[in-house]
Image (cartoon, rainbow, N blue to C red; front, side, top):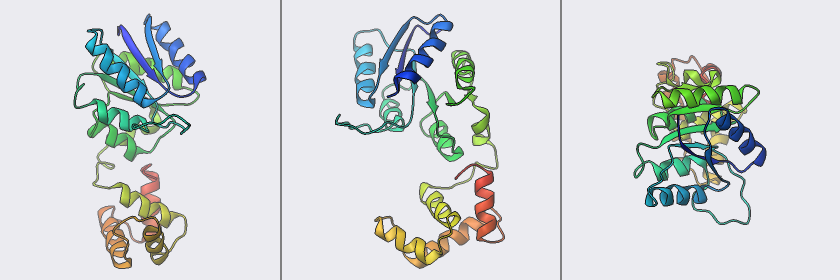
Length: 221
């Protein structure tokens, strides 16, 4: 079993819960960090001391406070670590359950498991630890379709934003104005229309309402 683990979460209650799961697996060397920058330095220092961590368990979202940080999220931390620590085993433990986010973390950042916080979070985390130790990928039931062929489509964060605003009842003109206001490009009406039409073709949607329904069913928004 893993010998040395780092938990990164800014909620003490969650940290204690994860700690209890690790203790139940016989893992005694457990360290904690509440900031991603702190976690990054701990991992680098551990390698320098020739006592590297075997496993990282991290949340994705961290509340901003007085502490100045360069790495603002768990995804930032993972992206910063992967080039230098490709063999570090990583489990994401988060409330986030969007399939698109999970797919990016697996395909781009090569995380080893994704566990959703919730009523069964502790049980699923225990399973994830066992799976990762045995070089197997574990996904919570809520996000297990993240790698299915139906969700393996080219869709960007920009696309997600367009469809999300569409689902909120905004017209294409209103979406264009919103994008411009938030300095998101491309934001012209013609760009929005072309992209939404392309997405309709990609998802084989009959209209905008159908597109929103399909994307929601896939858990992308």
